[in-house]
Image (cartoon, rainbow, N blue to C red; front, top):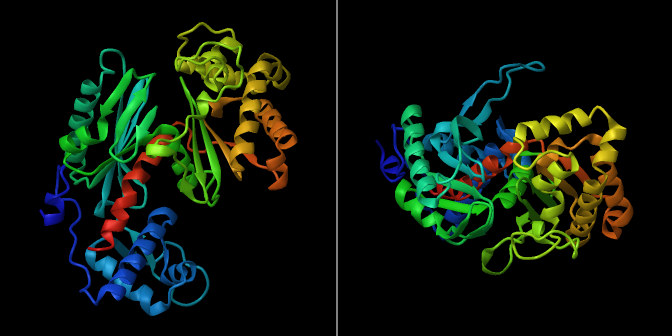
Length: 412
């Protein structure tokens, strides 16, 4: 096992070995070298295999620099090169540069009100293995969740015979990014849980924790329908409702590193009492409970039954618009406010909201275009379903873990 693997904490095998990087050439050249290595690794991690010529063109680097960077990354074990499976045109095809998935493996964890999902993800985004389990009280207690995550991570790593270098965790609620403190997660019943510190100590690797909607936005920005959009809002509709905002290509957060809580924007002052203490929060009008009311389903109806009902309505446009008329009104009102505040190129609807019938989504999108001056000014904001579905937060957690890994790898 290499020194790098010994430092990785969660073990279960040797993983891929890494050699040393190039020698130090002075502060400025070394900074440039690290920057270029990070840029190439990030491009390959997010964009997939491509030729050296493509890397040079997209990153604005000359051929000799790309050669040095790719050769160095290959020597360090992060990339490999091979001929493409299919040839096009005459002559010898250019080699493809590929990320080596097991050269850096991250743990992604998505903690929800009713379940926990975990995955080991390799460089390039390849899912190497995963597991999940249902959450019911008292198994929802922080100690129980922490213990099972740590044990399960070790089992996954051992089964896959790989080492894990970092972890990213998604949690519904207010999360302080600096240290992973879950300040408040009402639906989980958590308050002031030092999740990041405790998981890092148990796994013996760096752990970063973030709000679930923020990670949904990150996932859609990097690998989903909002890829390439510098300004987007991700709205997650589950038991609760949250929103993640990316502005100018960066996650938008407030004081103390806490993200905003779009689900607790008041849209109906005389509405239902919310668990946060206010009345008429957006969450009370478009969350799971609101959908159950709209469809005359009993509280506690299994999620699968709710989704099946929504899918069935998708084939009945008139019935869908009638039965979900009030729900549509509140969803549209909230989105008009969100678009007016943040001026995104695209709004992505996640989780339960992805199951809404197309006529409802079409009506909501029309109202956003009609009622938001900002949407009209920027050429109309798109309102779309998440392509990642319920996987968005898990994908975002993996990308959260990889962000510092890609930077650190540039110095190897």
